[in-house]
Length: 221
Image 1 (tube, rainbow, N blue to C red):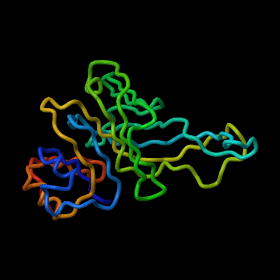
Image 2: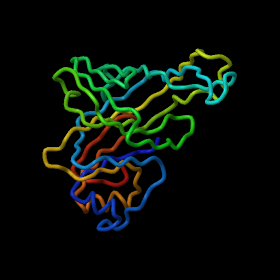
Image 3: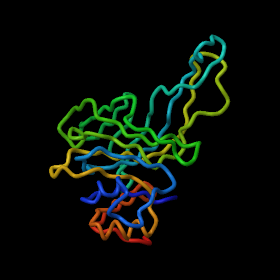
């Protein structure tokens, strides 16, 4: 599995404009840009299904296609302990009762490298409940996805339903007290990491659904 990184620091603007960080180039794989002024709040690994229902294709009463109905997944922390659920809305709810609902359509959508994996998303928070961590969420990212794309065989009648197993990491962002500049999620090479370290970035590495944070970028992990 590839390693992906959230890189946060004062050099973000320079990186986005292509100046000030020699050796940093666009990398293969999905990339999401996060609005300015956001910080990492928490992350959770989701395991569950994407539920699809059959709807008539536009302009046809006899041909059908799979349309997303809702996700249904369990949220786990980095020790694989159940911490909450993910459901339609889209809604994320923690065991402590805090809840966030995202805005559809997403602000950003990037196809995953594997066409069998659901897309990476950036969604803005629409509403909150409770007083726990999710009450502070401003944006939600879906990254590091596996599975979830409906079968290539089309449905034969309206109302048919199918469930496709998927996994993903959800990253929850909140407003940064320092007004941090934009972050970039990408898969950098060693040269990019060295440049990030020199520029003073914080690197949060996503490996197999777990986040590893360090105050200095390190290559070859």
